[in-house]
Length: 195
Image (tube, rainbow, N blue to C red):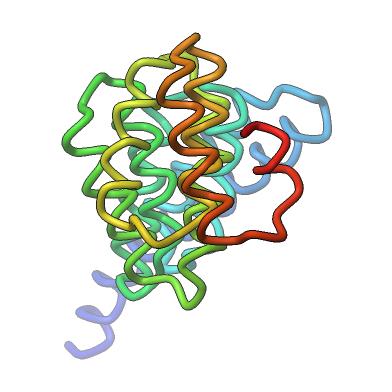
């Protein structure tokens, strides 16, 4: 009887393993063939079966690069689920939520990323890098203004906001933030050039 019950459990596990292996193989084949959208979809599907956060991370990063917000959001959520103490999923969750015009939700994710980072300056710089590549410039600027308000003593935030303001033709904000960046870091040549 025990043998029969063991057999009853095994086929679903075998099917699950076959599904995982199939998605992973198809993702690798698609990636090799430069079918990156298909690869991202299969990496996501494999990550939903696996407990390995690296697959969700790969699906997230690939989706972000390709602008696949729906797949990316699912992958980033799975990554965060599998690695609840990791901060990097929140960086991408912020970007994907910004792309869906959820500014408040995006801000929460960026703040979670920054507050959990071991180096606040580097985390703000990385957030600015991600925000600078977003097509929703108004949303990106809105999020960055709030981040700078939350971290007013970080020169990198003011410098990034000065650059965003220059892009948006908001010269007063650019001047104010470039000046604040140079006050916080007097030897920072790039900030001085904006000021």
